[in-house]
Image (cartoon, chains in turn green, red):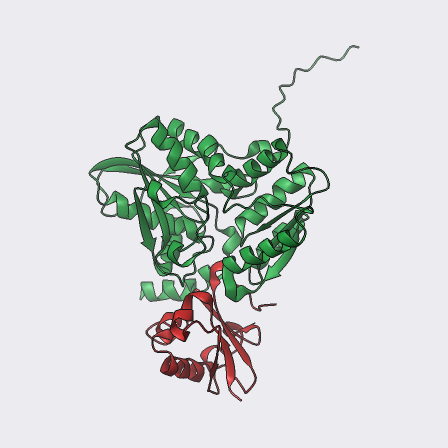
Amino acid sequence: MSSTPVSVAVHTAGTVCDLVGNTPLVEIQRLREGVADGVKIYAKLEGFNPGGSVKDRAAWNMLRRGLDEGRLAPGKTILDSTSGNTGIALAMVGAALGFPVTLVMPANVSIERKRVVTAYGATPVYSDPLEGSDGALLMCREMYEAEPDKWFKPDQYFNEANPEAHYLTTGPEIWEQTDGAITHFVASIGTGGTVMGTGRYLKSQDEAVQVIAVEPADAFHGIEGLKHMESSIVPGIFKEQELDSKIGVATDDAYDMVYDIAASEGMLVGQSSGAALCGALEVARQLDEGLLVVIFPDFGDRYLSTNLWMGWKNRKQTRNQ
Amino acid sequence: MPVEVRIPTPLRKFTDGADTVPVEGNSIAELLDDLDKNHPGLKGRICEDDGSVRRFVNVYVNGDDIRFLDNLASPVKDGDEVSIVPAIAGGTRSLS
């Protein structure tokens, strides 16, 4: 008896890197108090990337460019400083491409972070937590300068392949997903890669699109992943003059917004998403009509052991009294 | 011998740029009061109006988070090292 031929349609990706991008947009339905009916707000859920954050885009493009230009080659170890998502992204992409990865991070990164990067096979090196992400950046620079031939340093703060990732992917995705109707783009600033690259693409399609960056309102803040530009080492890729405006958000407001997004929209996100939506709402409330797209850089499950959720219970009790 | 308190970069404008300052006190609450006496305004950046430590701020005694010790009543003694760290890079129970 002859077997019946089976026709199988195979849809595969070469590596996990091929799955980076093409994240969904979802409308913010309830958290729109004071926003006119003619204004729509959509969140782009970057947590759907394979490494769980928007940083997959930059990591993949920086390593891809490094390979193309021959700066990343067999025998090199990938080295960068990161307090979080970029480290996870580099560890993931490095593993998928077969390169070892060393990451410098402040010693007080959450236990989930340490375990995730270690699981991907990366080697963590810890810097002084009191010096924050700038301390990790400087320590990483010293390590690189001591042995420049050993490392490939993507250097997300100064590598144009970071904003380019967003010019090539995030921007076109948003343009297509909104059918060119986007009027305002809002993103929080970590390195500035997302807001710069996406903003450039959107303005290349329609100069009138407003590009708005969100940062912590104060130098002393707890919004993980974000930089307060005035008090920080300003990333080389960050060009403030290209922005239409910049909004400062207080840590408490960002944290409260995270709780509200989970309870009212059904999305558990990180604190940078909370900050971004605070900024987007501030913009939206000034408009009669428009279509805003706001970046939600990651989901919230990687912050459950952090300060973000520490005051949660007390807050709810106070609120219900 | 007083307790050494390590100040994070964004708050060093209150300590004339010093990364460590000597402070007197037998508990974290007393330390914070003494810190504010010598560096006015500093406590307001670390604590809420009711005196509790702001939720994104971690205070460590010899590397242990006071939330897992006795909070503001956590005792300190001469020679201890106290660190004030914003939770930018996540929260952990210990600095090590």
